[in-house]
Image (cartoon, rainbow, N blue to C red; front, top):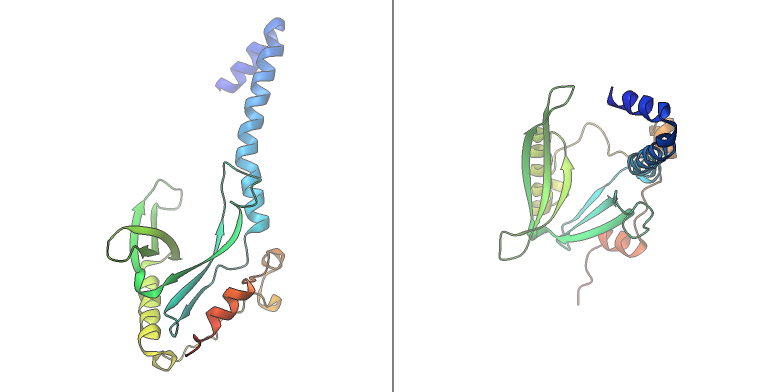
Length: 197
């Protein structure tokens, strides 16, 4: 309502019309720029998946993370995939549920993997694990079982692991997303055991 009133008043007063319209256009353009450009850039750049690799022989965890920054929209350093590596002993799972005003209910559940500074309880980083708390508990139990006892301790899975780079399993829209490509050094390190001696 106030927008229509503002437009009516600026257009009916000829001498104020130019200044008011320019201010409105510039303000509207900045807001539109700040809302639309990051959304388009995330849609184009977000990879097909953000996998996590657990290497029990090295006791390391590798995260394929996509980063973005709404203020620096065209920065190459603040946008894109940045794989990170953390020690398994520094990781803990945190579950949280928050009520937020939303049209479909309001309960937001998530499980995050927190990286703890050794010897303290200070959190260095938080990484997304899953949306559902119950599923997060199950996944975290499987990860702990794998890291403690190895792959032979895991139960038989009904469905094989999904290859996100296989186009046959994806919808048309997901095929457009960039494929998951680990840097060569991290790809090799995350799949192999440390050299002995």
